[in-house]
Image (cartoon, rainbow, N blue to C red; front, side, top):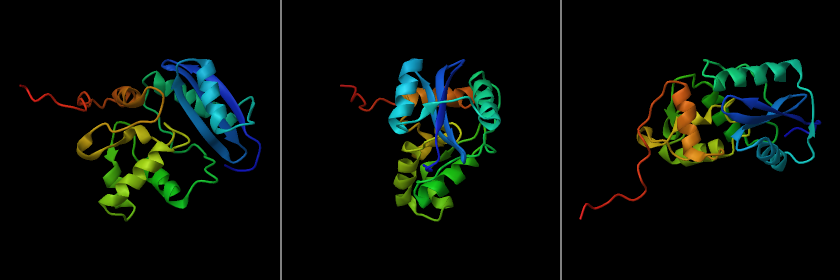
Length: 187
């Protein structure tokens, strides 16, 4: 993250309490809805210690309004939100730029993004690592990136893959229920 001062703001949406942090360069952290305002704030501050509460800038206020519309079920694009990804690995930044091109109601896979970035199937794991460390989930739509075969895959946000499924459902994407980790042999 950039060395400029960060501020944060906690706010309510139709799906729960979110948090956003920013610097003069742009949005540096976004926290998907958590169990409570306190949990959301704790999670945000764990990742950006020393950040102080603040009044959103006009650009951040626009992003907050867009997030509220998103969680109310409205089609929203976050591609114009200015981000502060300072300190992120160059490959991760390329992954994030590619993921931002995946629009509302569409999905891709880790492997497809890896191939788009010039890597082979083995780079899919690296794409997955980038998604797991995404500092601005939703704004960089990691929920739209699926595992091979269109499976849900992991999701590091509160609620895990159930949250990912809910977000995709908001966008009109209906995936099958996750398969149990162990199948019965039917004996």
